[in-house]
Image 1 (spheres, one colour):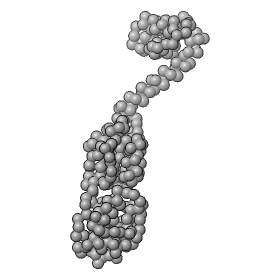
Image 2 (cartoon, helix red, strand yellow; image 1 turned 60 degrees about the vertical axis):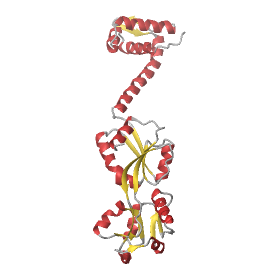
Image 3 (tube, one colour; image 1 turned 120 degrees about the horizontal axis):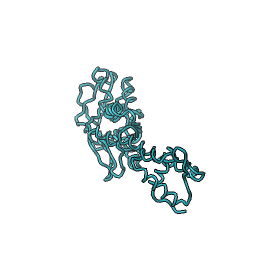
Image 4 (cartoon, helix red, strand yellow; image 1 turned 90 degrees about the vertical axis):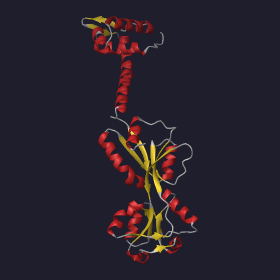
Amino acid sequence: METVNNLEYYKVFYHTARAGSLTVAARELSISQPAVSQSIKQLERAVSVKLFTRAAKGVRLTTEGELLYGYVAKGYEQIVLGEQKLRQMLNLELGEIHIGASDMTLQFYLLPYLERFHEKYPQIKVAVSNAPTPETLLNLQESKIDFGVVSTPFESGNDFRVSVVREIEDTFVAGRRFIQYKNRMLDLQELEEMPLICLEGVTSTRSHMEDFLQKNHVSICPEFELATSDMIVQFALRNLGVGCVVREFAREYLEEGTLFELRFNRILPKRHFCVVTNPKNPLSVAAKNMLELLGI
């Protein structure tokens, strides 16, 4: 028995066996009946056995044909299913996107775009890995995510493509317990005497502020180190210290006057949100459309 290299023979065999008719198979395949007959003969010659016999209304499988059909049907139907799923993916009716983002970039940049994308493509699953910038960049390097939305500063190396999408500002905020600092022009050195509330661990926000202060010969030892900027704001509202956060986190309370910003004789450097991709990682159609929505 020869190995059959032409999968088209099996396609004709499948449709003929399922329909029990050369005529119906020809119609389903949009080919002529003689072409169906020829394909069946070629397959029978290759496998060295008769696969069909004549029936009153068409053809029926032989015992050997039944055996072969059991395997061919499973394979062919999986191929058809695969093609169907692929079409759905290309039409954005199926698929997944994996995004890396911090609490800050998710809340103050990415969330509205995710909402719009979901309204447009409700069948696409979007998974967001919530992590600080260094971890997001590592996940991108290891192809665990399609792209990341991170905040500067960070080391991207030569592998990543970085697109700046928004400017952000860090600030120090406090409540009524620290009213003596309000409307005063402070020296950065005075931060060393204040009970500070900062983010814990290795984050771009913490690293950025520490680097800036060190360049200005200021060394800080925070009273509290918290996991999220939202918690920093809550601690500041309860007068537990002076919080270091991106202004957006405290905007509501600054506008209503329950918190105020400290002013310094040095301007705090601005930072940016960036969308970071890895050109080495192939992107799905869904991920490409999400990036287009972001204007990347």
